[in-house]
Image (tube, helix red, strand yellow):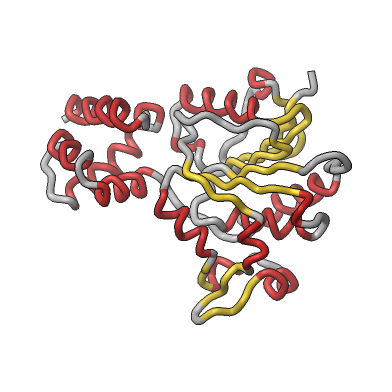
Length: 258
């Protein structure tokens, strides 16, 4: 059965470019075995043959291989630090650029846009938000959230940036327009560059050490000199200098100017 799974990993990489081998095997195999059995397949080869023919099944596969846990201003003490960093940005000659990587259903990039709006106009900044999963990106574009997801949103922001709608709240159109959503595979797709800030939180924990190292290097390369990388609470980078980064604050790293 181990060879069955490894052949599945090879086939997925050759047909989609997604390298499951860079994810921690035990976690990923357990998750995908559950999905495979739910679909009624006794082994990964039978599952794969159907997977590449059925777009809906492929979408479910992509959804299951990623963990989509998000809320507005998740870990608010970290956002308080980020707010201070945002106020220090120099904007006199250009737009400031931000990237929310593995953005899930959109709470993070919308949180960022709302925070930026406290200090800048919408014309001063642009926010790119990416995820590998098209389904969650469609949810993000709609911008509708149940009340539970907004528990950390300050009341003045709730009043300024949301409209009450049925059982939840919808992000106002002006905020939606400030965020560009795009499908992106962190492990295999090319990266845009010149970002002042990249947020990549709570995704690296699923990768092998090899996968993490490749990701740190590409994230660093995507930053302009002096730009900031903001990672999750369990994703401390132990040797940031290897990637041209310097510790800036807890879970914040600044790209070297040299």
